[in-house]
Image 1 (tube, helix red, strand yellow):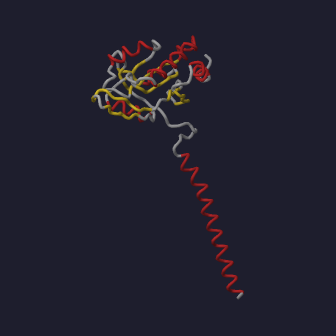
Image 2: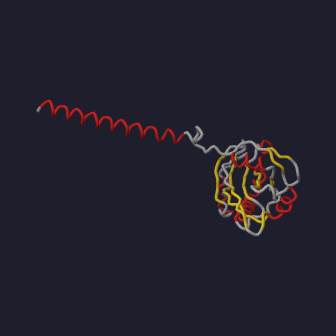
Image 3: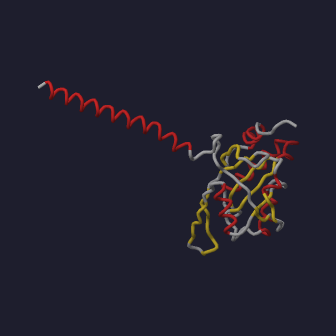
Length: 206
């Protein structure tokens, strides 16, 4: 009888030990797999070098903007409301920054290169801050830069014709530092005063 009780006790002890070991492993493993999706500093891996064409037909490299903050917004000129709101908020925020606006490069990157040609973006740019750089490129160019910035964009066909369509896309405004590294993102509908205050925090005194 004593031997049977001892065996039960031993089995119970081994089971508890195994369960405890499994729980410890899971608690240890889950944070590790989560951290692997981030850079060593804890900042999301967003951004990277790109070369695109501006509204004047000139090839522009992201490296030429180093030394200044970049405000980058992805959208398309045929967007009925979201994109104009985001670009107007950026325009308003730059106006509030006064002299510091010269230290910031506002950049619009289209997710609709087939319609947003350089010529079309040149006209579209007249609605916003005069320093806006409007960028387009080939389908491959746009896909590559969208991947770098983790931008979602999906064309939605409309029954009225193949050239009349909307695009579902992410609407964040990205702030990159003077070295081109991601710093922060903002919602497209953040009011100009709030956006300018957030940008000001990243402007190092000279």
